[in-house]
Image (tube, rainbow, N blue to C red; front, side, top):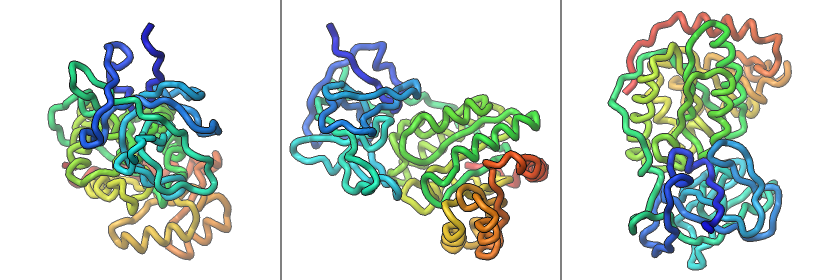
Length: 346
């Protein structure tokens, strides 16, 4: 009887659950970003011992479970930092995200328990060759993206980007528009783009579709992935694209490149901010190159916060969690979409 594996969501583009594979321990010098590896769950169980599976559903993990994930890097300001390159001689791994991003944690928030620990059992191989995320990337004919873009950026992770994206997508559907959505930077987690699809986006994309477990990578590597994703999005023929740049454009996730590529297509930029002072920080860092059309997130939770955003930065803030603000949002989006893109991306 073959072992029972849990396939994390970074494997969702693969065929690992339908086509047999072998598990082979490889020398550390043969490891690489995006490699599929098998880990056995160890350590003391806590609330982080769960896996986001290939369908996006969450599964509880117990000691001894076999989990298939991918080697990668994370640099989250609020939760944790880690890299597969920091694995030691004992080859223990940490689940840097519940989506199966494997590495060795180097810095974890004191607000979190220990990350789920895994014993490295080996790489996923077929016919003596290791398999990784890039092996299952579907190529696309190069295309130019030339539709309006609603750009969601944040001052940090957990600033309300995904929640705001859901509201925006529903509003665009209300206007009768065909919407596609994408999360172009961040660390692998399927549930974010699934929320966009549930909100009404016809198609959803993220960097996993381009073979990346996270976008903490070289600019050249990310550029190749981004251009592939934009070509796939362009092939959809939608009316409008809603894009989330995960984390913050100032973090090492290549968010600045997304803004550079899409700046001339962005008819509406939403800045999701953790607090009013974070709005000022992003504005100071980017200056005239980062002009938000609207601020939302926790920085717009109260009237006092909204006034402070205006005082510090001059930006208008609006809570998208309050349904009474939806008519104003619809008006803002309608006016923004009257603008034609000035220049195609790419």
